[in-house]
Length: 468
Ligand SMILES: Cc1cc2nc3c(=O)[nH]c(=O)nc-3n(C[C@H](O)[C@H](O)[C@H](O)COP(=O)(O)OP(=O)(O)OC[C@H]3O[C@@H](n4cnc5c(N)ncnc54)[C@H](O)[C@@H]3O)c2cc1C
Ligand code: FES
Ligand code: FES
Image (cartoon, rainbow, N blue to C red; front, side, top):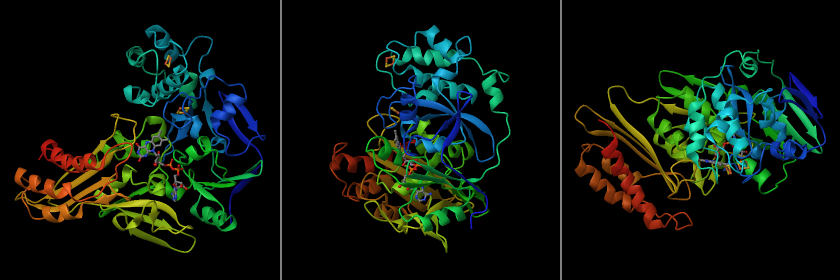
């Protein structure tokens, strides 16, 4: 039974400080479509698929500890129902008699020519400004075709620390509202936003055509580009059980619906393989929304977190209304985008076992793509090697994405490495095995032989770069 819920026939949110109620669009209309059709045309559309940042807006979000911050997001990928109850900011709402310091810095540095990308850059910088994290990385998800990045980066560098008493900073100090499950019915579409797993299962049982949605950075492409209709969506964004990090002496469990930005921040320094992959995982706007559950949920052979979790021997925790079970990630993928997850199961978390005491762990992730950041992997790799005091390999995990129909471990090379010394000779022999371990595809991004050589060469790079 649902305990604490609210039924609504309209979405209500705050836009640039003013209450807005919307009942004449479908729940899957994107935030960008809504903004532009209602005259807020400062927010631009470039690609419509999360790549250019022209549509960037800022939202006040709460992290898993209840702390609020401004976060930049791509409005082209967000269904409007996802902003129900939120405080949203667009480029029209940040100047106050005078330009906002972020806007002023762009003017002073000559950071805008045609101006098409400018609102998106401004909103990314605005969010970074109030998080005290304004850097090149804050604007990695924004493309500019004409000004060039020197002037824009200069603007980002000259912006001084946010004033803690300005009106935007003050908004971050307000108390969080009590949570309840929301049932939205809009133009024949239903969008449920439950606060507990139990409520998720109730909605799933009632609506067999319901689709789960988390950050929508993958599903959002279906809305934005493919114009796919989703009559019933169940959002996992507010489900308490999926937003926890639990640690015991044996393992660490990470909730499926925590955003990747929060994971990056909360678990920094814990797992080198995760830190190094998250650095190359999309841009800030995407990481502010994307989740682990969604990355595993897509079951893509080029999902970048999948080699990371394979290398860490992680298990996927699944739950439906009747039972909970754990499946090792190494056994989870059964074929191209096929998994052991049943249709009624929700990915609730991943569990990473801790390493055996007394061993030295060497680990790192690599992502090879056509661009350094914000691009799709050609090959991704995560390596974990444990050494004993005699420098012998006691545990080896070499996991790859982009080389088979599923994310996969190099089992033959791992077997060879066991009990060998961590030496150049061992690595060169392992490279020979790795060159023939997989039969990847030739495709638009790379040839099979190029992929095979990356598989082997990345392991040698790891040997050369990792510090003993
Ligand atoms: C511009 C751009 C850049 C990107 N860059 C990268 C990248 O560098 N590396 C990479 O790996 N991916 C990348 N992606 C893909 C995407 O961001 C990731 O796969 C992300 O982790 C998806 O998470 P999400 O929460 O947004 O999932 P959603 O889009 O909400 O959902 C994706 C799928 O998973 C299902 N799902 C979600 N959560 C659960 C759950 N808890 N239980 C069961 N099913 C669930 C949904 O039903 C849906 O089928 C990129 C996407 C874009 C648009
Ligand atoms: S329009 Fe390009 S990221 Fe949204
Ligand atoms: S100013 Fe023209 S695209 Fe950036």
